Length: 114
Image (cartoon, rainbow, N blue to C red):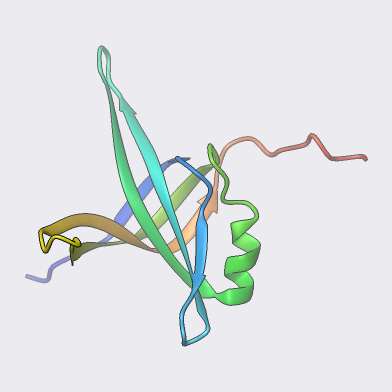
């Protein structure tokens, strides 16, 4: 049986996305997504980091729209990020490598017609 690593998640950006460039010329957009599941009597919010690799021109354009509070839908895969801090202590967390994003929610019409 084959393994499947495929994630679909929607939520709101916790803060504005950050952009860095790789030596290859690719841009990496990094952001944190808050996804809330609401039940009858409970509410559970999951915070997850996302890295989205895009051509630098596309990444620069997306950066203008990936602002705190923006509702988005992400499709990607899970990866385990591992590192050691300055004291040599090991840390790890699961994050998403995004393949596609889609903006969801109401269209901002505040500047239309100006």
